[in-house]
Length: 101
Image (cartoon, rainbow, N blue to C red):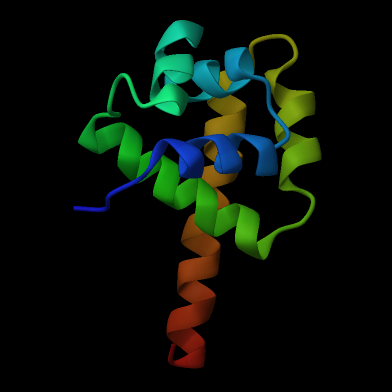
């Protein structure tokens, strides 16, 4: 399983240009949980780690994702934000398979 350090979680959140509250909302947890992850007081579940891994892949390959996410999270469109992220992961994976990576 993928291992993530507290500093990696903070770096991912900042790369997404999200507050702890928005990041927590995206992952379906309380903002204090996200804060504790970043301080190393709690560890994310396997599901949350998988989401973070996918989010990191998307951020590395799509510069405009942070602005799209921020716009969608305003007004609680969490489902839309997750859909966009996961769709980008899927499309990126398909392209990589076609290119033989």
